[in-house]
Image (cartoon, rainbow, N blue to C red):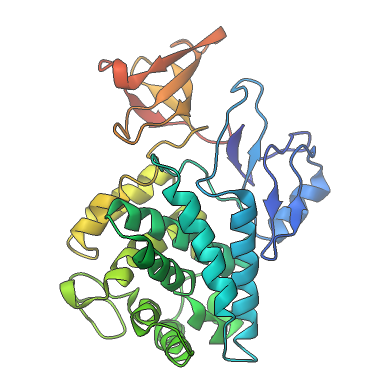
Length: 356
């Protein structure tokens, strides 16, 4: 299977991985054959891509870093908490702590964590899926930085609710598919202060964790908001969430922007190391996500076409690939596999259009 942008999927294609809504409900099950009506509805829901079965690519196992059950539970609890905060400024911290602990437990049990999976979700439920993704990415980064379990749980909770202030903003500010006006941008930036005010008033909620909501848009060079903090003055959890928040936005196509491929998002983050982002955080984050995720169609310097079938944390730019076509474009029958980590003369020179 491989990820295909929604504008490139066609009727008759078969879905390989289920698509879920914000409450954990199945929007489209794995194995379903797409029809024009299904595609139209998915587009209306803001789904940007699907995992599609591809005979040429063959069977590929792309595992999530946490179980589907745990991710969906985190999604459900996050949505419930953020929906309820509008009516009742309280959180069921026992549920939140339980699901954060589950995520931490699963991540700690995986000694070689690297994110290969492209998260497929409906953009009209963006805030909730984004929050869960940011929490998972932040926790993996925290593990890479040597955080102990207790510290990881605090980081995970802060990351999960970093955008809780968005629940108090007008819908027309959050759901624009165009750049915000100056007035709208000023209002949007208020979500950091609003979120902090909500969290700091909660009983048994750590103030340092609440500061993640307040400071995740601060920048290393002092150009962020709301207080223009810089370097070590920024909360250490917020430094991590600043990076993971942007990465998830870039790779999901937030705000109507084109969806970046993982290597493009990583390049942008690396380019802004020591400008916007703490260098230690960037260094550790770089090792948490695959530059070329499993299922990525690529072109080698030999002009052969292939698909990534295995990634290595130690060699992020040199995965194992399945060569599908020769330099002339003729399909290889059968395809053969090439480990770039063991073949220094071969390298990836281009990502092929996901819709090809």
